[in-house]
Length: 253
Image (cartoon, rainbow, N blue to C red; front, side, top):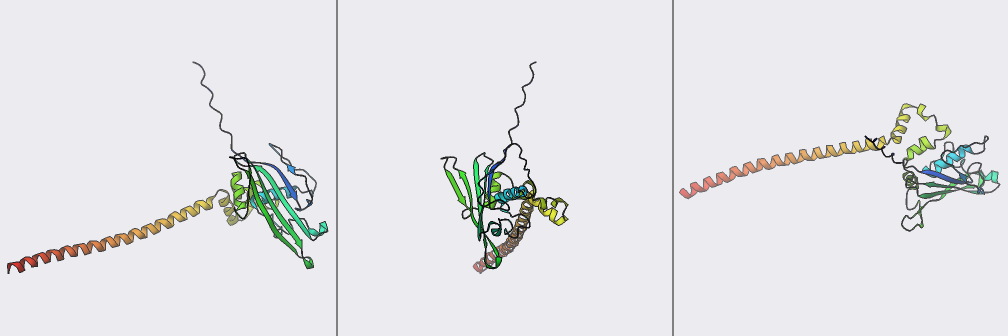
């Protein structure tokens, strides 16, 4: 007999990909930098001497996708290029990341910041624009959504098909936080709950348990009301029979 036909190949995994990123005014990157970092496929190796900005690239990927600052960033003041180094009173920084979402559509997320040196040497960080730019599949036109219309920190992970917890703790984890699996039990449990979405599952179980208790209380109240109505009905039947009996006796008299 002829050999059986080979089974069809499994469908290709739907994954997002990072294309390139432009960093301006972050850490050691100049505010005037115009050279985008291109991420070749299937593998990108980041090589450089100490202080060249290798870790900054990972920090910016994490910031662009999740909006989270790296550790020891002092609320962002140590994350943006120091105005003193640039010999200015104000530095404007920007991270622009181009990636392809799970539908393989090109998307661009842009996050802009500003660091100002106040009198007395105090630094003040301010978040400026945060925008996601996509293409309308019907018309092909560019569509921009700002943080005023959407939660950028939640929207970008959804577009990439990866949870924010995985991006923070696995994909773009900072080297200072990379040993979190060796941390305390409570912290470790919290992170694993976030990564595997166990928190949502637990909240769902709690909500179901709450609804069950509420329904049980309602059923108990309804049963009590039904019992009261049954007693009242039996009493009414007895009164009616007594009334009919007395009416018959009165008629006989």
